Length: 401
Image (tube, one colour):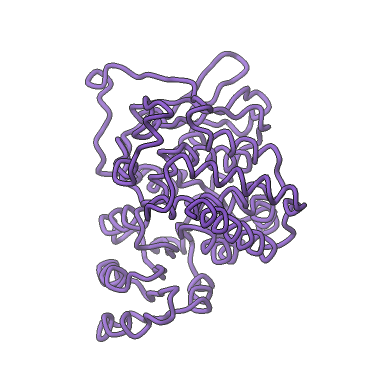
């Protein structure tokens, strides 16, 4: 992650392509771009199926092209953009074509394994990749980082915790780092007993105390699986060992990341829980840009608390840490099984504790079958992902029956 500015030719706006435009990250990004029309120019907006919102955003941001991954919705999108001068396209090939357009920054915010191929395709010399898709590192970290190194592309983390660590991690003295600590809010069930968590509903789990996020990531926050994913990502983003990575539960979500140095210094990044701050940092780096977020008043906050996570009550975090240490295909299986289990919980097929139970069962099953070798290609990752999803669906069917 080099300290170079993302710029077009002198005086020209910075060109941006957004993968996952209609999600929560894309919406926050759109707000920043709309506030800085002379600074940024949108080349392409890519979304999955939301034609109405994508068309509205494309018009508002004056994008050159809007693309839906779902090819069946092309006509809907084209009709909505008729007369605007904005090109419409749809389908997997169209997504990759959008990625191939000349641009300075690609924001990788497609949710799920679907974001892997287009984000990998986006890695080009001279480009900045603002990464918000966890699957790129969780499922294919070795492949993704090898591609970054080969091309010399610049990688900046959008996720609030990783971005916070990036801001206080002194790369030149990385050998003097003792520990990197990611903070976790603890979610809505931080103080719940195991018995209480067994009875929680999807509606309860979707009420995050601090952050406004998509459904899956909100449930992952409630199980603390999301923090586990973030630790795996951090193992690729920063030059530290697995043993140097840690998690602290911090209910106020004010301190987003900390780095402990050998001299006893503990550097922390603090900010309001608003994703526009880390997104703006990635867009303007190494400069800063104005963001309309609530500024912290530490006297008003008064108290910041920290706790060690309970791996017995939150086994999903334990599973993630174990998968990170196991390496190979384990993190990819962890992610795929989690996505299927979370979806099953949201539709009432399984209970909240069944989410980590399903994941653990599938990990053990595929390890016994010898399926957790390191993927050698994106195709291998996607094949393992498909296998893990199918095994998880089978486990859920057996459970429901």
